[in-house]
Image 1 (cartoon, rainbow, N blue to C red):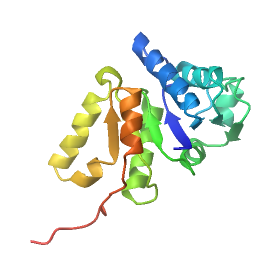
Image 2: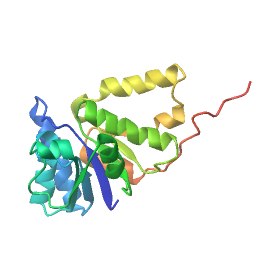
Image 3: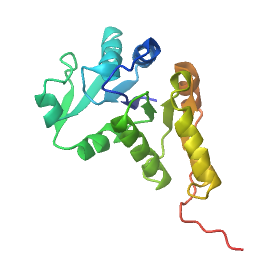
Image 4: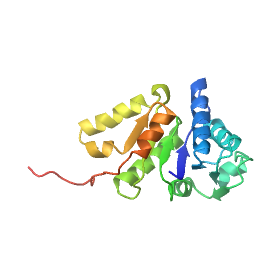
Length: 192
């Protein structure tokens, strides 16, 4: 991988291991010289991730909305900062041309970005790995929901595999490196 989009919370969460995971991911990506594209923020896990990438000399690009930048939330140390008008434009630019997506713990925004990438993968518009860093089981309920969707016929079993998850940074990066795109068409109907 030469570049990866990282989606993560604009809050740090209320447990220290979330910040530790963001810092480890930023450090690891910098050490591997993998360009990080992120939401451009200086707060929460976004800021921690960016600080770690910068501290270890890694390449990083921020994509932030004009509204959020106007609130002085843009990371001052990130010099490659793209300011856009809308969240939709931000999501598109974050994954365009990347070699993968990683989602750290976060809230609505992180979920929006993560599921946008999965939707594009399901539609054969994004054929790179979409990874979920499941820090201490944070995403276990969501992963259970994906299985629930398969069970009730709203998600193809093979497309469930588009969401790669792992509990640690090395394990997730290894899974992403070994990833082979194999989505089936969502509307493929089995005939009886």
